[in-house]
Amino acid sequence: MAVATMQTSTSWLESLKKQPVPSHTGIYKLHLQTQATIGSAAVRDSVKLPPGIDIDEWIASQLVGIYEEVVQIISVLEAVCSEESCPRMSAGKHTHYSWADAVTPFPQPLSAPDYTRRLAMFAELRLSDRSLLPVDGSRFPPQFREIASTLCKRFFRVYAHAYLSHFQVIRDHGAEGHLNCCYKHFLFFVMEFCLVAKEDMQPLWDLSERFLEQDRSIRFHRYVRLALFCGRILRPQVLRARPKSG
Image (cartoon, rainbow, N blue to C red; front, side, top):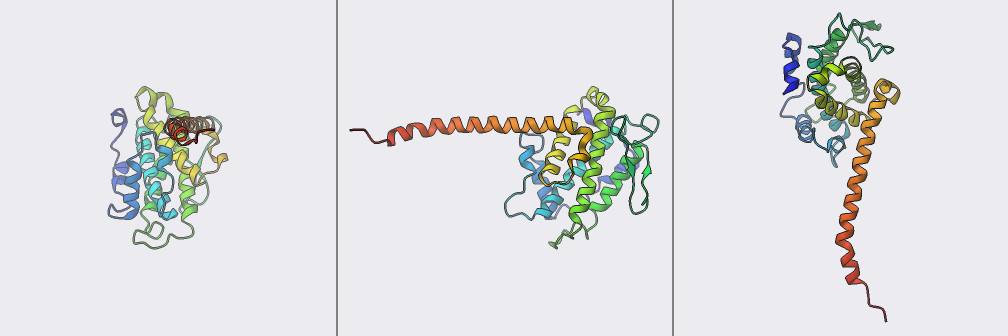
């Protein structure tokens, strides 16, 4: 696979291969159920809350998949993004991002490689925190949705940097389709559960609108085909059931 040829074996990335959620838990099983549909025309449907599933547990299961895909994109960027080429984490020429967390409370400008590494490790710690993502059936804490939103907002910045700073190289390596699929999954997920505001996605909003319009078009044509199919099935039955005049 083309993506694999771009991956590097840095020690920090290898350490993230440990699953942040144990494989025997309900969250991880929901995550696997979702992953089975990714890469098909059902990407949008894959993020919708199934009947009878707790919304926070579903968001958590989706977040695991989103995190794993972002780590894949970061591993791709490791081959093309360096301290010299990207001395500041950015989305194009005019949007720059700084890093802040409990250890670094004041926003700190970082290079793109340093930012993405910190984000990957920060997200892994959050998703491994059982007080935040309980796996024993306990209720999710009130701050879960806010932290999920913060993670997604920062995940978006990885996609924005990949598209706006390294897209041509990614395309040349044949990984464009993989990047698009991962971003669509992310986009449909955050839009479905209002986890990232439109203004925070402005650097990629034109692309996002294009993907959303493609989805609307696919759904419309699917509806038309279904309506025509049902019409062919139902029309003869209606004609046979219609009473004769006179």
